[in-house]
Length: 252
Image (cartoon, rainbow, N blue to C red; front, top):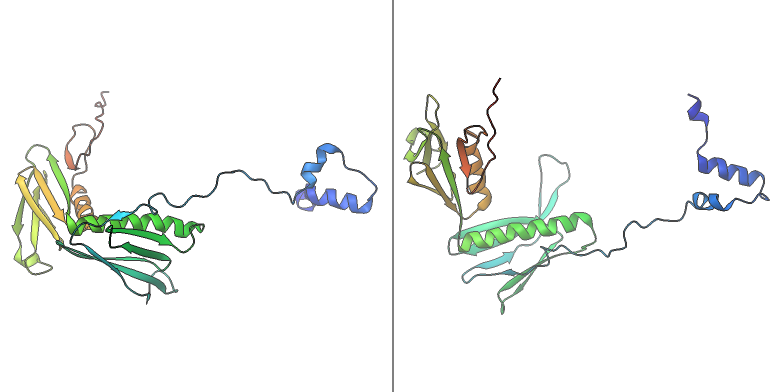
């Protein structure tokens, strides 16, 4: 309780000087008294986003366009959000990317490149979204021109995969299901989302193809949740070149 009534060091020193202005401070107290001085912890200059300032090359047959500002409501906030939409069209399809209002797009039709920018690169939030928007746009450009792929590997005795139809469970017309045998008493069935093509070159290999990388990897993650790789026998569902470090068995 007594500490609440003890003034701070700076306030106590200032009060003493005001009461007796003829008192001179010792040299070692001057740095503590000069509270207005600012310490600079870093002398390096601020740099723009390394990814954001990189040019994006546009393959032949791919077109980009940015829409005007549009306002939309978000369920998690009472404030409406203002965004722009970048439409990417290519030989394999079309994708739309929503970016913040401060993101700008400059196209060089002669060199077939695109440069993303922001209104103020010194603002932390804008600098963060600058690189994020660049990564998403790069994946979209590659998706509509070449496509994205992912490979699932089933490691385990009796693990099998096949693509079949389940008419009663279809969420959209013509939907197929990935049927897996992963050691359970019943087969696992995962509905394939729209825009994703699933094939099984071998019973223990699953090939995912599509234009949207986020949708492909999200579906691969749902499949892996049924049998995550375990570290003792090395069994489970692996995505692409994923590896794990095996552990020794606990012997009592």
